[in-house]
Amino acid sequence: FYLASFCYNLLGQYDQAAAILERGIRRNDKMPNLATYKRLADYYSKSGRRGDAINVYNTALQMDPRDAEARTNLGWLLFLDGQVEEAIAHTRRVLQGGSPAAHAMFNLGLFHLSRGEVEQAKTAYARAVEQFGAALGEQIGAVHNLKNLANKGIQVEAAGGILKVHWGR
Image (spheres, one colour):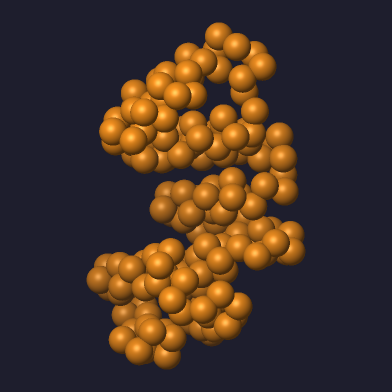
């Protein structure tokens, strides 16, 4: 099941990948582990099934509430779903866990900015760039996400200021 679902994933056929993994989970009660649930949530997310992905990440977090990857991804999906307060709460929990989490740090800035909390956003971005560097921020999508927010007409001036300060744009 793992291999077949992985192959469909590589082909960009995420619904098929998820369906195969779901069948594997139903057929083998030993199969559902944290990694399996995170993979299934990823397939759901890639196929546009955000609600299913959120539910599966919540299941994964019941298995291990400290899993930073699952919690960061859940925060991102909640943000996309308009549940910004919950997204911020999950992201802060990741950051309080003590492990370095670049995605979570940059996401926190974006989440705050989307709510008009400009000073919190500036602080979050400054900390993220200081800890992880501007190059990594760009590599993981921070610049793209800021531009996307501004293109939607949300905090255009503040987003532009953050981009200029940290990425010279």
